[in-house]
Image (cartoon, rainbow, N blue to C red; front, side, top):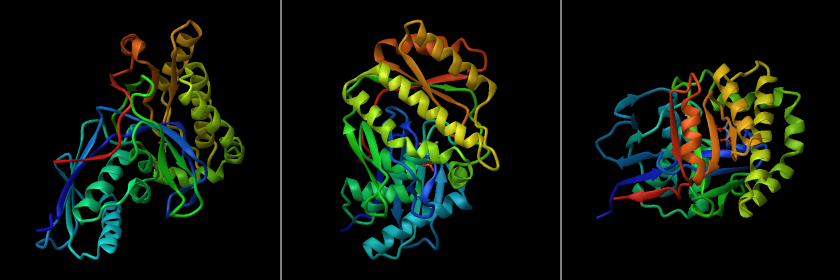
Length: 325
Ligand code: PMV
């Protein structure tokens, strides 16, 4: 008998070269390619059950019933899966995050990667990694990067088929650790979904895009050669470029808080004084501080001493989205 239930687990990812702005808003075809690292130990676990008794799709996140636009985004992916599998059943989706949602730790990336895998498998489909990455991308762009494992590059592509992510080096290839300085767990005021649509209103976006293939190349090489100094320089530049675009779009988006800037300044000073660490910030106030495994506890302790840092999550490089029993 065919099973209509599957459960998948997926890590969020932190972008080293950021995705900001779409060429196609509906399909999430990005304006530029991006590179990220999956975050081990932080996860979304999602169970999908296609059930004859249901009259509509249902979503619970961390045991709370969710309605409105998050449910609509999930339903849109379920609808694509139903079309591909030629089934008509509605599904219940039960999702659980073990990290704060909506505060610059890419919860939607882990969520849609786990949903793509669990929903397709529950419907009896066996999509390959590229197919899963494309499906996850339709839920949230950066989710396509949480499907493959380790260090991942999303080829921007120019249509639905050509836009997906692939691993450039496996988890464990390089002992990098992301120390996430959590300064707020509040939901961000402007979602990345709304933010992407504003990217083109900044006069700086064109300059950022024109220089992207250079930054991608430097970042890819830095990973492959395990060159921390080169990685540090390019990811801080890339983060600052994205935030410059955000701050100069109309309306302007400011995701940094005073503590965000304080951490960025301190991390840059640590590096000047010989501690290999660097920062990157997503669409939220929290700061991701990358360092080598040997220095992770020192970086964590230093971050915890900065007033305003509530906690520090640490994550090594995570594997691909996977099914669990
Ligand atoms: O996938 P989205 O729509 O949540 O966009 C992610 C945007 C950033 O996190 C700011 C950058 C990135 O590449 O992850």
